[in-house]
Image (tube, rainbow, N blue to C red; front, side, top):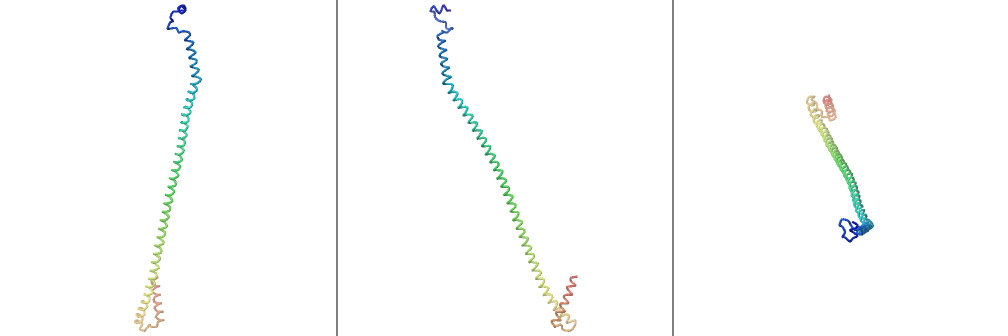
Length: 177
């Protein structure tokens, strides 16, 4: 083969020319150097920026989730507090209503007792008036009857009173037994 190459014969397509291999290797090395020196650092910087953006977004999402959970807990606590306060207000209202009811019942009882006492007092006064009137009438009738039976006049006021009082006392003592 060497002899073919030195005789000026055309080169075989299977075996590359050594000058092309050298130029290709230098070009490849230069391309690798440019890629490593200029392109790869920019790609690495863009990759890092993307990673940081994604990680920052995840961190912000986690912070937002934590804040949302915190706000939810605050909301639940406030809701529980409001429910407790509403129950307290409802219980206070019930207690106030019961106190008002008890007060109204007490006043009604007092009024009923006052009316009953006034009625009893009125009845006692009327009884005394009736007893007084009956005493006078019974006394007069007793004197008239006694005058007719005894045959003497009991017109004397002092005697009449004494007789009437004695008669009525006897009636009362008989009624008390």
